[in-house]
Length: 93
Image (cartoon, one colour):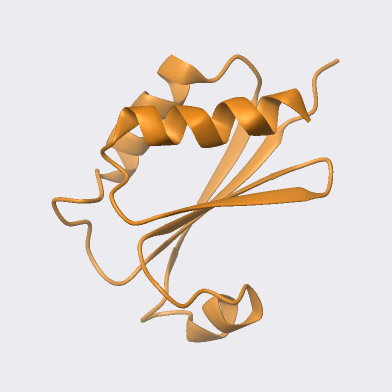
């Protein structure tokens, strides 16, 4: 059975042009992922302690964890090719 990817998206307030809505993120992930995943979204204005613990300095940041390995995608999350690279590397682990 494949391990689930753990994804955590850190945002500063409402989604912007560089960050799709939660539904948009899930749609992109559903298109490119071949394994199950869990996605949580953290608004750093509402939960600054979570950003601090995760060492988040810039938003948006997508943190992808698989088998103890963490990868981060920082900045424009609408670039599907960048997202695919991070996800593909995580699926290999």
